[in-house]
Image 1 (cartoon, rainbow, N blue to C red):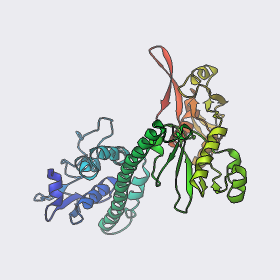
Image 2: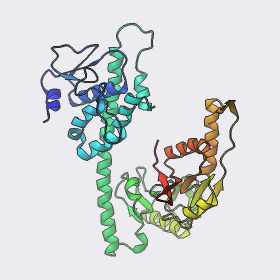
Image 3: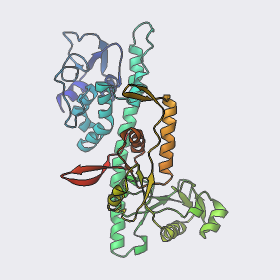
Image 4: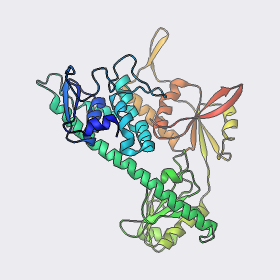
Length: 410
């Protein structure tokens, strides 16, 4: 047991943090300590008592504070806040080394970055809203511990989610390996190689995106079976779609359209179909794969035909159709000398971008190439990245023109 864990679990354990306005950093730090020891006594104040013998965080310029000039920064440039400093020592004992690192990247780092830089973070804003109003009287300790209680529930749910995802990955990997072996040994027909039958529902989209599996079948909690098409890696599109004539149909209409007696429902969005019998579920997959004709599309937004020549050389989309869309017209500007600003209210601007993105998404593109007009491209690119749509751009390296993918995510 490391020294911090010993301090947290020892009889009469205590911790101290700053008083006044609180943020997600100190709130989640307190929640983390309470997760490990619900009996730990956390005190707030303006100054750490000289005789305090406990854990001090987010104040005092000590090991778990980050307000000093030489405070630590991660290798990726994200500065540590108190939450990250505590998690660095405690995370592996909670989730194990590998999961703790993933948790730091996806959950802790955005909160640390918010506390150090003010970068917008919805969870940090939610926690900050627990602070009393500016003209409230008295101590805000009660509000702080209300926020800590909420943060504690979030942490517990997040930990369980991470553990559950790890269990799911291992389970799917096990099922997939058995499936591959069965196909190899010809226990399963080659036509079934792209259909994975799960004995129970297991989250598997992320793992299977890197495989050839096109459909997953699993027992429905309502009886019968569910069929889910699987998406391609780095794409919002499926490896294979249900026939468009099936979408939105159910019961007798779907049975007539498919020729499958137990066909029950096919979602209009094409992400789910149900049948009463396993054999019909498998046959629905076979029919879909037989009728599926892939027509990948790449949207060239404001780019030249020169870019088209490179786009159709990309791996896996050599047969792609390139659709050209022009950048939207420049909005009306308020100009002062050489400086200009869009003469739009924030909501008008958001609606404009939403409509432009909608025009792009109607083509269901495998990727979107953004031309050189940064003013027009940036807000659209930002929105597409949040939707995890691959966005491509052109760069030059060592005198050679390259198409590169901008990492997705918010």
